Image (tube, rainbow over all chains, first blue to last red; front, top):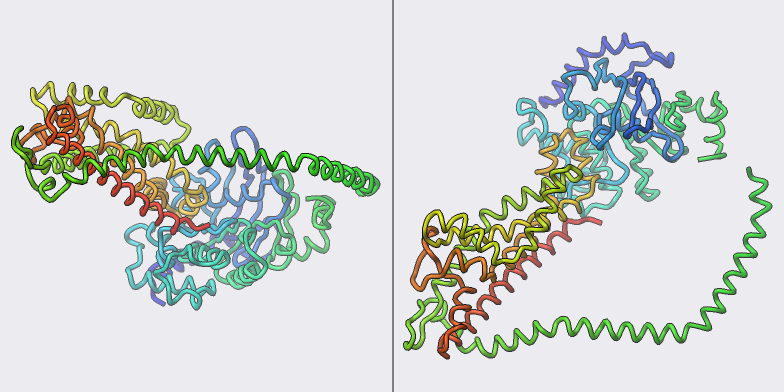
Length: 285
Length: 309
């Protein structure tokens, strides 16, 4: 498929990948790192909600962030695409490197960063005034004029994004209809499609199944599992079974600190820290 | 951690049960009395609800009775005639009201919507708080004061009354209404919608305009129409500004006739024929306001269609 955006994307990956290979893997695995936090602190006013966190997220993997309510996992996630700073009084210190480049560096625009790092929220957020098609294409319209796909390319990208989220067959006959008419689960998959349409390098999921029923949750989980080949995924979840089912690596956070960061298997079978063990065996949280 | 909880649990549930028994007993004792009080209160509020709509019903029936006879084709197409002559209409006043409303809307809607967008987006800033307060004060000003404002601003410097001055006076009246409606509607757009747009790489202004404002638009249109309906019947701001005109005029720089003023003028005369015309004018004005209100209702309805959950 010779779509301009993807060409540009592939080129960028090729250029950048040697750099990321040089980035030391803090966890000693062999895999490449797409996005990494370096001594990251996040504040709301004077309150420090994320405390000195450093970790690298591996390319093509699903990384889950778990921890009790209020431990700062959502805030950590929102630091990774500069959404944290959209809240008044919120502030970030430290570095986040996307393929080696600090997204908080001088001259880097937040909007530019967010085009490369997609995000899906707890509740589905389709734009109510837009059709299904326009919702998926919404992110493409923010691209710089030179990168903006033509109308037919946009249609193709929309179709591809909807197919990747297994929504195409359900909506292909009503692309012009309001996105509000879809069910909650469909709306959430639409939001994932919308985030994927601009071919981001990283996809951040902030408790994406928290407002969905069991069946819709299962579909989203399957989707996340399949998408890992194409995009690096970080998922915040309340649900430890979900983290165990779909993630390759898991971060456990407590009171703003990263307690442990292990391959998911090891995390759930042989955690090193007693606090992790206490949490995953259900003794608190 | 688990042991003490287990020990406490049974005791708690016993006390819980006895509390429920107590509650049931007291409920039975007072149930009859509370039912009666409830019925009385529902009855009183029902009476209040009916009384609240009575004035409108009286006005409507009276207007219809008095005005209907004089509302005919001539009323809409003919000019006013001098005293003594029978017939004639208010064509110039109907068109004049239309022109003044267009001028007021052209000035008042963009300023009001812009201010509302600012107040909603820059909620906590000092300027926003000051503007919100002043807008409420402006909303509370007597309408005659706005007429004097229009006179001072556009009549005195040019030495003559004009439709433009009338439009400006009504715009000043409209701005706080539109500002408030816009702010309220934008605040109803969930933060999650804003965040979704920002996370897609939308800039702040683009998020405000193409997502937030667009989502709130049906509600804002409703608010704008209600504001237009509200100022359509205003007389006082026009007395010093548009002044009135017994001749045909479409010029924004000349004095112009308007329905409310024409009603006022005719009602003060001793002539039965002009009284009838005034009643007819009132009925037409009411019809106009009614049509705008119904249009506003329809705009609201489409908002519910878009509102999602």
